[in-house]
Image (cartoon, rainbow, N blue to C red; front, side):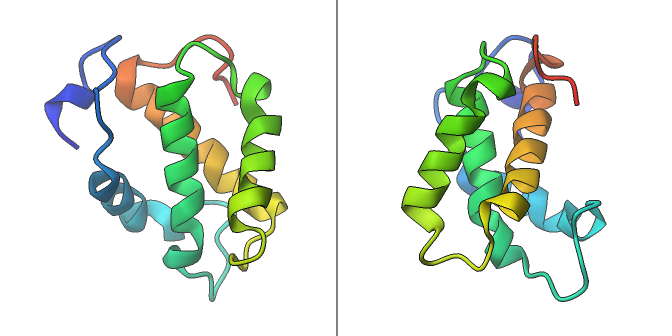
Length: 112
């Protein structure tokens, strides 16, 4: 990701979805929730959702937005994704946490 992600406190004006996808594509098989046979393409929407939510709600704790993220996941992906919320939420949360580190070293309420 570009240098704009490394300036503490600065949130970029637009999200480079391709960069986010590349970042997670390289790491996804090392995540604790990964199981043999999982496909990145199934997790990609969850990573993007978590990352974009963190950018949008940078000053809120994950616990404050999780219900909204779940509702959005159910509305937008439940019918088309092989991932239920129970598994998708793990990727959403990882992307949320990682985006916080990329954008400024974390924020209140961001601890695992």
